[in-house]
Length: 345
Image 1 (cartoon, rainbow, N blue to C red):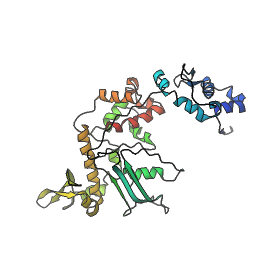
Image 2 (tube, rainbow, N blue to C red):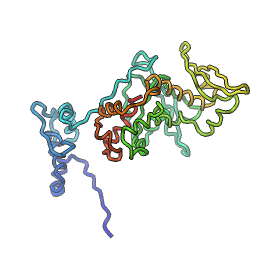
Image 3 (cartoon, rainbow, N blue to C red):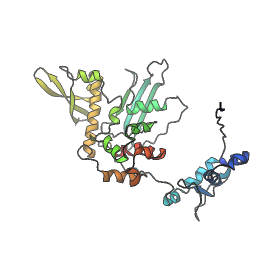
Image 4 (cartoon, rainbow, N blue to C red):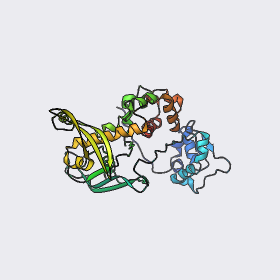
């Protein structure tokens, strides 16, 4: 039997590896050697050819000692981003300006909050989140740091509604006009059903009904079979059909089936949150998404191929890639597709 492969990790730059194991480095492909040369700060590696391209006149790297530091090499690249973009070696991503949600006048006003949230995964005795509070404004730019298993992803899922906090402990709030874009940690699962289709077809299918299908799958939005059955019971809330701002409170118009047919009634959001069954709040959140789709135009117009092509180009995916199958895209190109979709909202 053949001996199993053994991987050895060398925690150093390629330049240092060349000095340590020259017999291995000498046999590597040219692109690997170019990467080592790029560590000197004398140029950059063209991702399309693997060749070392010298920096142009007046664009020399600004860092010193880059030959011995991966950080120095990264700084060299950052200091020459404009040159890399101009040469086509880096394809930039251009995000559209979403504007301010109606009712939010300043960048300091909270648009999402969590207060004293606790969370424990089913079957576990250890709480992964305890007494967590978060405030997010339009001006927030947040990076979460922590060890593996510390609860970073769990906290984000609780904030955006992909998980529900421990019942009866804390609260999560989102402004009713806030449009949410969420790129999951394992975002490529969005593409699993569309590998045989083109990026254009994927976008059109994802927004076919004027709403982002992926958002409707969040746990705080998707109704269970039992909750769907409750809707048809006499006196239960069957649907949410209207929304009004009365003073500082938001009111919702709901449909209730009764003995004499269906009738509508208005309730403030605060009462729905505290007095109604949890599924009604899910329906309220879904109605908010419908209103957002109407206001953005997605619900009343088809998304054309020309519009999608324009946006894909902003994300570094040209016409040739947009008309090819998703399964033919590289890993990096596939990563851009889930990143591209939410800004359409």
